[in-house]
Length: 187
Image (tube, rainbow, N blue to C red; front, side):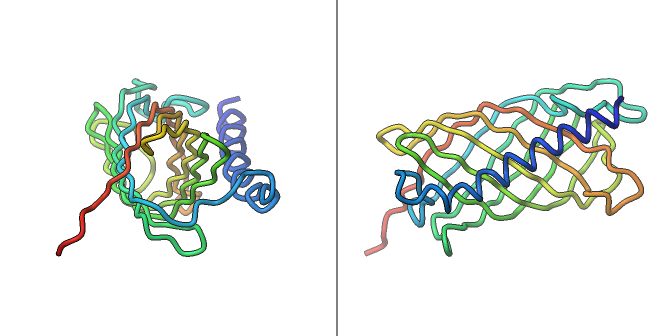
């Protein structure tokens, strides 16, 4: 049963990410578009580490932990795809530094942001993920205010994608706040 829940949670996350990317092509002409450029963003998320669909893992007794996620998204994009840099840390000393790619898909005041990243995970006293090298998938749905800031819900997944013998995986749910960074020009 445990393996079944892991597989279902991962399939749901992958389907959501794929749906977000594929619908951008369909959405042209319907007011939905991929944001091609804009300011860089700083994101802060507060939520739960190992929150949904994944069992605690071997030797790990605390299934859900508070966590903090901090990200920087570049404003420069190529074909609507920008770079992201971040760190996520939980209260048991586990953390992951990551880098990857993101896109913003908007419709009216809603922005859908899929992220595909990779990086290094340190277990601390936290969950065993069978290796340092991990992948990170994220999907954020946020409301964008008139000043450009965004408030939304983020779901994320850390996994080694079975490049190791086992793939315990980890899922997160976070409340996310993003604010644009308007860097002044030097004269």
